[in-house]
Length: 580
Image 1 (cartoon, helix red, strand yellow):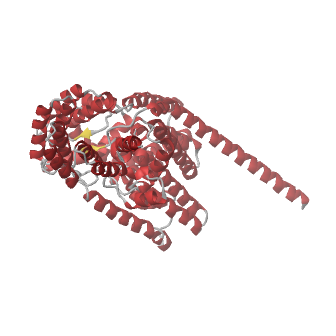
Image 2 (cartoon, one colour):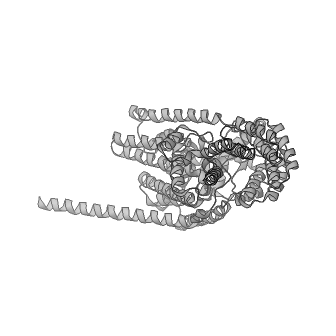
Image 3 (cartoon, rainbow, N blue to C red):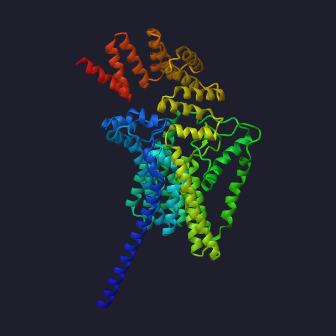
C-alpha cells in the first residue's frame, strides 16, 4: 500500500514538474515574441496625433476631458462619430486626466494594448491546439504583420485592440466552459467579456457565430444545450447591431451611398473586397491608409477579373485538404466570419477596404499557417525532409519580410504629413489625400502656402467639394488674403448653405474688416447649424470683446471651454488675471 502511495506521489511530482516546465517554456516564448515585436513598434511612441479621426476622438472631444462620475455617465450615453463604444473613451478620459494631450503616452498605451492582444491570442491558441508551435507562429505573425501597424500607430484605433483583447478572453473562457463539463461560471465569464468587447467596438457582433465555429472544431455534438447557450449572445449581437445602425444614421456619412457601377462591375468590385485581404496577407506591399474604389469605367483593372478565381480555389483546397480539412475550414471560416461585417459586397461609401479590418480576421489565416507547419513536422502531411526544411525557411523569411515592411509602415504613420504624403504618392488622382495633407501642413508647420497648393490640386480633381473650397478660403484668411478668401467661402456656402464651418470662417473675415454686424450674423449661423461648434462660440466671444460686451464675451468663451477648446480656457484665465 505504501509502495502504491509512493508511486502516486512520484507521478504527481513528475506531472507537476512537467507542467511547471511547460508553463515556463510557454512564458519564455511569449516574452521573446513580445520583445521582438517591441523592437519594431517602439518607434510609434514618438509619433504625433493625426488629423484622421484623432481630432474628433481625442483632441476636440469634450467627453474625455470631464474626469468625474458625470463625465463617465456622459461617455456611456453619448455616441461619437456615429458609433456607440464607450470603453475606449473611458480609457482616453483617464489618459487625459493623467497626461493631458501628450501623444507619447497615448501611443505607449496603444503599443501595450497590442502586446496584450498578442498575449491573448497566444494563450487562446495554446489552449485550442495544445501546440506551442502553432501558438508561437500565430502570435508572432499577428504582432508584426504590416497590415496591423495602423491599429498600433493610430491612437483612434485604441478601440480595435481593446475589443480584440476582450474577444479572445471570451473565446478562451468558452474553451474552459467546454473543457470543464459546461460549468455555468465559465459561460458567465464568456458573456461578460463579450459585453466588454461590444462596448469597445460593435464589430464584436461576429462573436456569436464564432462560437458555433468553435463547436465545429471541438467536435461538439449538436444538441439542445449547444443551441440554447448561444441565444443570449445572438440577442445581444442583434441589439448592438440595431444600435449601431441607428447611431450611424444620425451623422452625415456616405457609407450607404451606393456606387453607380454596372451590375457586372458591382459584382467584380464587391468580390475583390475579399480577395484584397488575401493579397495583402501574403504580399503586404503598396499598403495605404485608404483604398479608393476604381474609376467607374466599362473595363476594370485586370486584378478585379482575376479575383473571381479566389473563392473557387479556396473551395478546391478545402476539398483536397484530406486530414487537414478541419483546420483549413476553421481558419477560413474564422477569417470570413470576422471580416463579414466589414465587407462592402455592394460597393458604397468612399473606401471599400481598410487595413484595420485585418486585425481580427487574419488570425484565421495565421492559424492555417501554424497548423500546416505542425502537420508537416508531425508527418500528418507527407513531405520529404528537404521540403520540410524549405517550409520552415520560407516561414522565417516571411516573418523577416513582414518585419521589414512593418518598419516602413511605422515611419509612414509618424505624423499627418508623412501619412498623407504616402496616400498622395499611392493615389495621385484622389482629392481627399491632398485635402488631408493641406490640413496637416497648416496645423503642424503653419505652411499655409503649401496647404493652398494642395487644395488647388484637390479642387482641380473635385471642383464640387465645398469642404475643399472652404478650407482654401480658411488658409487664405490666415495669409491675410481676405478678399480672395471671401470669394472661396461664398462659393462654399453656395454649394452647402448649412455648413457651419464656412459661416464661422466668413465671420472671421468680416471681423477682420470690422464689419461687426455681418460677423455676428455669420457666427450666429455657424452656431445655429452646429450647436457644439466651440470655435464659433470663441470667435463670437472675440467679437463681443471688441464691441465692448465683456459679459457676452465671457459667456461665449465659457461655452467654448466646456466644449473642449483649449484656447478658450487660456482666454478666460487671461481675462480673470486682468480683472484682478
